[in-house]
Image (tube, rainbow, N blue to C red):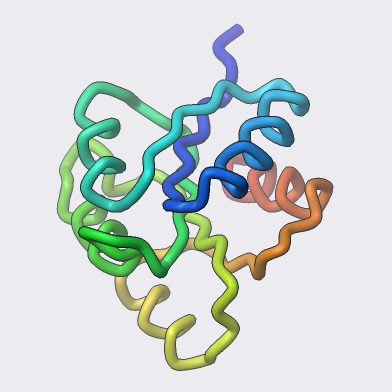
Length: 122
């Protein structure tokens, strides 16, 4: 049986490590990228079932990353969860308009994160 694969895109090494431990501990396969540009590079050679992305990142932010994923024939239907410190309604709307599936505020609760992944992959 194929494991669910999650691509995490975040410029914080600490957050990437926390996500890796949480996701691998829950039985997911995890791919990681350091920003939106790197995320698109990783997507070029992979087929994740879910993407988790930060918003504030160097080179390409989460909004630009989400827009690029949604323009891709290959990955446009992949659920995208935003994981960020931002809680501003305007930014949530912008992410939704770009194509984000959900929004989670940092620091994340591992159980709620796994629950969100299960909901969007069901």
